[in-house]
Each structure stands twice: as structure tokens, then as C-alpha cells.
Length: 486
Image (cartoon, rainbow, N blue to C red; front, side, top):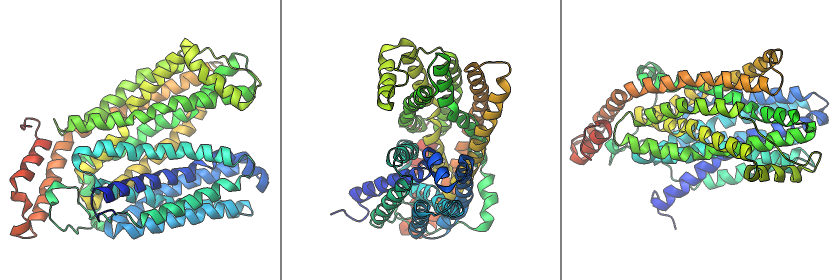
């Protein structure tokens, strides 16, 4: 039996939050592989179904701000349950929709609920994890979202090949199961992981006039804005399958085989994102030496990845797969190429290393939001950053398509795709600079937040005056002062 709030109960809670974070991305990821099937059933173009996905992203990002504010202002557990039930209902309705208007409305409803999961669960997870381990645990939490998107693509393709409705209904059922599991999670007290608040019942809430305070922390400004440029570059990487497809077509493969080759290679290369765990570990380790640690790891990772991406786009690849064969045979051929073709192996190594470097961004971004903000502000700051991320990602995906079209006049495929993708990596440069600027302000913002929390904790009476506790003060100093003894 799990002790209430004990190690096992807290571990169970983290696992459930990771599952929830995965499932909401599954709900988004199941739609794109089914564009053709859904469009044919409703008698509309694939563009109409793609529009539903675009609307879903926008509604989810905007709704997340409202959900995050509600979570920072009230009890987070009911907010997260309500949000989960809403996206489950919208997803189930999507699978039962009898026409395009009904499907579009169902997707919009699901998007409203999806906005709650990431923003509110981020706030809760940040309260479950001590500052020393935030980077590592946040890397798992962030990785679960990417895995969820990939799983959604697989679920949509595998379960939907005989009927597009089944993936929606299965995902909704999984969401209901996750909701039941969530009922038994630890209801995390706000600020529980903060050493300054040890033994203190912390009940602060966000208020509508706190936005100037949030933006007054200069680190928050850089953490929110960096996503705009970073996601333009990341959004362009959605076109990697197109680049690899064009390379296959340039080598004489038929269109059907080339599409399979492009998708398979892009999926394999994306596995490097799993190494974000190393970025989280590096951030945790350097953070114990200097309060600039997480920001510097993110800055170096983003900037150092740029030349590797550029090389990846231009390095030649010799592809040998059976043209016109079955899906399984083509995928087996791609996997064999990784071992038998040196050019493919080199591309994979470059891609994995580049993705490992850029993936250091995510866990350290999550952790820094928790580092510089009091518990009652974290969900709202995350949602503001997520909104800017969404706008940047949508912009990158749209702009790079226009760039490819313009470049096709001067460069034949696949060179136009390589040139376009390489050009868009320049957007990682301002991202790295903003992380470096955040590294210059993070120590002051952390110190101010710690001081404010200590002051609030001290106000609970002499028996709970953790501000004067030597162990707490020494621990905070070691985290903030690069010269502190360890």
C-alpha cells in the first residue's frame, strides 16, 4: 500500500503525469496520418482536415493560458481532471462525428481540454521534484510529449488503416483510464519541493495584477521569447521527410517508395531527441556549480547544433532499398542501410548528435521556469512560453514551404530543400543568444524569488521560521553562489 505522499506515492504520481502528458499529444498526433481517410469520408479536401489540426494547435495554446491561471489560482487537481475529461469527450466525439462541421467542432472542444494538461501538470510536477533533480525529471516529462506525438502517428496509421474512427475512440478510452489513475495521485501541496518552504503550509495564489511582476523577472522574458525563434527552426525540421523523399526520387526511386524512405529516415533520425536526458543531467550538474548552469547548457547546445544540421542537409546519402516493394520490405531496407551504407550511418550519427544538442534546450527551459518563479506563477509562465512556441512553430512550418518554392527556381530538388532547411537554422542563433542573456539575469531572479519565499515562510511564526535554518540558507547559497563550498 502506498503511503500518502511517500516515496512510492510520489513516484506513482510522476508516472501518471508523464502518461497524461503523452496521451494529450497522442490525441493531436493521430489526425495527420488520417487526413485522406477522414476527408474522403466527409467529402471534403485534405486541406479542410488539416485546418482542423491548425485550429486545434491554436485553441490549445490560447486555452492553456486560462487553464494555467486557474491552476495557479485554485486547487490544481480538479482543474486537471476537468481539462482531461473535456479533451477525452472531444476526442470521442471526433471518432463518432457524422460530418465535417461536427468533426471540426469536436476537435475544437478537445483542444480546449488539451490546453489544461501540459500547463497545469507542469506546475504540479515542478512541485514534486527538488531543484537538484529538476533537469533530469523534466527531461523525462518533456520527452513523454514527443513520444506521445510519435505514438499518435503510429496509432493513427496502424489502427486507422481499416477505419479512421477507431484511433479516436481508443485514445479517448485510454484518456479515461488515465483519469481514473490520476484520482489516486498525490495531491501535491503548492511549493512542496522548495527547501525554503520546508514545514510551511504555503497557500499563495496568482492574482490578475501579477503579470507585471512575472515580466519584471528579466529571465522570464528571455525564456518566453526564445521559443519564437527556436520553434521557427524546429518547425522547419518537420520538412525532413520531404528532403529525404526528394533524395530518394533523385536516385531514381518511385514516388511511393520515396515517401516511405523519407518517413522512415526522418523517424530514425528523430530518435536523437531521446538524448535530451543527457541535457537535463548536464544542466543539473552545472547548476550545482553556478546558477547560470542550466541557461549555459541550453545556449551552448542550441548554438553548437547549427553546423551539424547544415552538414546533415548537404551530406550525400546512398539509399539502397527494393523499389516498389511492400512497406515492411522498404523499412527493413532502410534499417539495413544504417548498418551497410557508410553515408547513411554518417548522416544518422550527425542527426543524432545535432538533435541531442538542441534537445538540451527543453529540460533546462522547464527547470529554469521553476527556478526563477514562485509556485503560484509557474503554470502561467509556462503557458505564455508555450503560446509563443506555438506561434513560432506554425510560422516556421509555413515560411519554409514558401522558401522551398522560391528556391526551386534556382536549385533543383533535393538541393532546394537542403538550402532552405540550412537557411532556417539561422533562427537558432538568436535563441542561443537569449539563453545567454538569461544566464546573466537568472542568478538575481533566483535570489529574489528565494528571498521572497523565505520572507513568506518566516511569516508563519517562529516554529516555522525556515529563513533562519542554517541548512536551508547554506543549501540556497550553494545553489546561487558559484564560490560556495560544496
